[in-house]
Length: 386
Image (cartoon, rainbow, N blue to C red; front, side):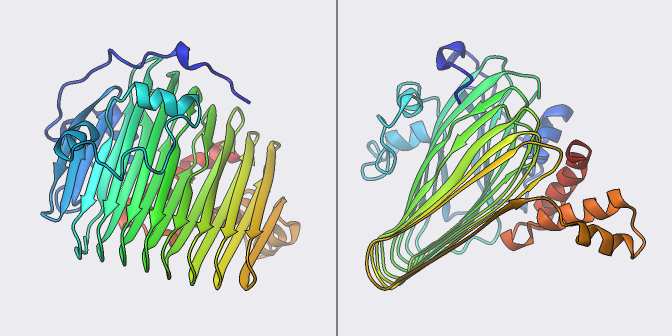
């Protein structure tokens, strides 16, 4: 399915003034950003912030000496084209979307964390669309140097849920030896949004990459399939995703882990709910060296129609690897509803309790304020679910 053509959208010409203080953003935009995980007050709670609006960067600031944040265009100038990092994990000729990102580089974030630094508060970034028929094209590069640790929160949102636009994003992640990157993404799009990110990452020896992805609002079309390569002994990767697809949404998403060194581990955990939309839930773990352990889990609920198509793939290429998967798509068990009704809840309350448990994001290790915002979004989404 491809419901749009890129030539329908404008990839240049929509600019905005610089925003020195995120708290000065208008009330409506502020609410959209907050529901995407962005802390507009930022002082004390964020190690830095980056905001790209339509076709350009409007806010870029680091609040920690070990965290460098630049617009990707400035980083390319400062680091002589970012050799070994820019367009090395994603092929610019992969498809029409990567070619568009290459031809129309509007910006994007460059984040580098110095070796050995343990950043206590998250770094936040936001890719925001306000223009009608806007085509947003960004390229992001994240480098976590040896032994460093950081949590990056990225919120992607559209100002008006009725706006028709397309987001094309390329992201490349580099986790050096012994480093740890937790990358949490919250999508807060609208019913006319088309979203086609392309992502690659590499994790060196002893490094850790954890990706949290949350989509609770309607999106017209989303296609995403990030690939992480575990390139050094002891490297680990884990993908957690929570997805809800209301009627009118088409979501084709998944994750891929390539274990290209011994003693590596990979996990892909996906929880999906459709209330009328279509979800293609993909997962692929490939083990090229032993010993290696990988587990893939995909669980889906169909509430009030819709479709969930789970595609788990395990590819063991040498003796001694341990790969497993568990996939289940169905409905809420009647016995679970009756159990809660016997304890005083009506049927709607019982169903809501079960769904909330299913969408639990506690394992993601999110900051308290972000966790509260997600719980609020889940509450607001319940009227669409039932």
